[in-house]
Length: 288
Image (cartoon, rainbow, N blue to C red; front, side):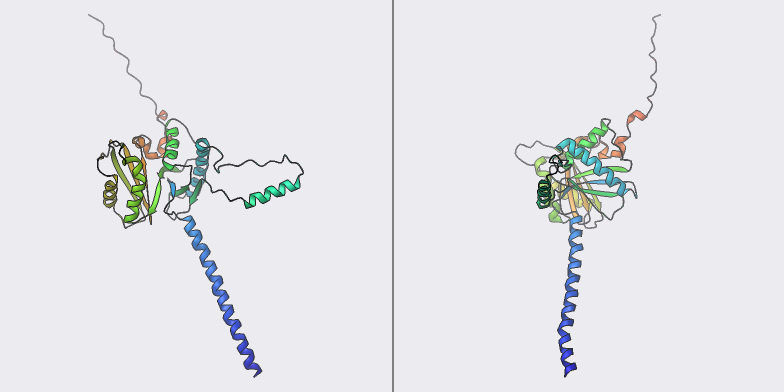
């Protein structure tokens, strides 16, 4: 009887131990899943794509972060989560004040960075998620315009092209229509909008659900009547970027080609490196 009773008492304990293991396993499964979602590009994001030399992704991420922060400070000021150097020891030995300050810092919500790099499993490709006040198109344009005008940012040896994205949605037919409506409206729609010449440039990476023709047809329909397609003399160029399960879109201006399609590597190769051709002397004919 004593042996039987001890076995019966052990049974609940065994079941409970099993349930604890299952619960622990569930917690360990949930955490990585949330982290992956946080690190992936999501509908509603804005951001900047960059291409770089092979196996130089980590170096390029650091260089671009420095460049972006420099321009964010220049364009938006240092009070937007870029830098915070307000620590002061002016109170001397006021320990109570220091403790209160530390408690306030702990309670204060953490400021999200203006630029957060998203880890990708594609070589030579980088993505930075941005937040307000950064507007990706004007931000990237400012960088490229400065370089075109002769600025030479340091430590961009391996960085190539930048592509700004105004909005993202899921890479579905409905998602493409939704992001097109959102991004194109300020440029093409409204009673006072002038007729525009436009072109569409799609890019598809790691996605087999869409074709270029489908994208162009859908985006052109979203532009609406009253505007004309012009592949070379466009007023506005619509950039469409599909990567895996998300689709992003932005609209850039007519100087896109002059700015080397936002390719920093090409912009940094200034024409001054070429020796000017000697001019032929003027021939002065004397009257007979």
